[in-house]
Length: 582
Image (cartoon, rainbow, N blue to C red; front, side):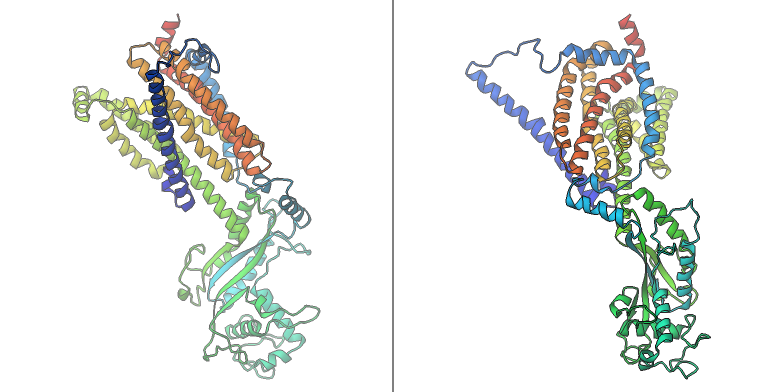
């Protein structure tokens, strides 16, 4: 349910549906199936056919083997803990090195026509890339915007060999940037080649201002540094297109409209005016670029970061951060740009996948904290809060140490997992809950959650070792491991507490846990792994990856419950176990 805190609707939906699924599983397997079995046994008993279960039957593996696993894990707890820490220390760098990707083979059959076609396109047209855009909003008729686009073009072509090189290039070696300034240059070239279409549109070559009130450049053409000239050229290109010139083919008005947008219908006969006789506004423009290998998110991220840095000339024309959309009406002569942001399919796909992965990882860590708090409530002491408070006041120093330790551990875990922004809230919450529920249950909850957190780290490391990246499948499975694995550990911890409440020693309790609960956990894990490995045989990359890592997740959860958790209990009851063994 930690996914309910996400800003992404799909993740909130996933959290609700997963919660309902868990509740339905509890009703079916925790209530309905036992009741059906109970009714069936009553029916057999009424007919005198109910037989006592024979002892010593080997269901899957001998119970003594599983009892030996738990007791030996506890007996050799220091060695198990050292090995787990060593493996975790090696796994953490691998986990942190994971990068997001969107490989086609991870989702569809690698030999399918679609996958083969995409591979051929990437191989043969790798230099062309996938088109992306920079959306500009503001006053596009301001000459400063045209100059800033030129500054952007210079910036993207000024990088060295060590910088990102994912933007597609022209045969000349320059980065391919197509914007309205390019269309304006072609329009002026067409005017120099043949001015007849422009004269028909109202341009007067003999007049000092061209007949439209704009400044001319030294060649007698409209100057791109003059607003009235830009308005005329925009209107001409949007109504008549760009005529052919010097070997360049004509450009249709619909193609020009991909790069500049006008407000109001432009007068065909007087393209510097609207049909109502007013000067048209040009609030939006787009800049086209290409990204090669857009499915490799590890390469796309630095390329987009570098592109945004190269957009500094546009930022200088914006009053606010250019990523924040401003009101178009706020554009003025000094700050004509109100918004400038990369977009297009490769950018949208990367941002959506990256946001989804970040949210899922963030809610995963929040889920660890929420699981700990939930288990703290589940393991709470039976005495009332008032009684615990009165007992604590009799020995205030010891009470303060216990509560302080709980708050300190909670604060440390929160800081490492969620950052400093959540620290004050969870520290105060730990203080309140220590008084309401007691401090001992907190450490039991931490012992229950800790092994599963280690499993999540190991699972991410396995993703890296297997050559996969972070995608919707691998991140979702890591999130699922918390909900699935915690059940294994809770089952073992609860059985251990029951044995201890009956007066059994730690060694005997662990042996009972291994022989009873261990058999159920082992059987559940084996059947789940077998089912997921069947899914792994699918030729569809999505299902194959899902089956592989779900099987790994179940196996690691079994290790966490049968080896890591008994080892933690062995460390907590070290003296008792050593004395029993001796």
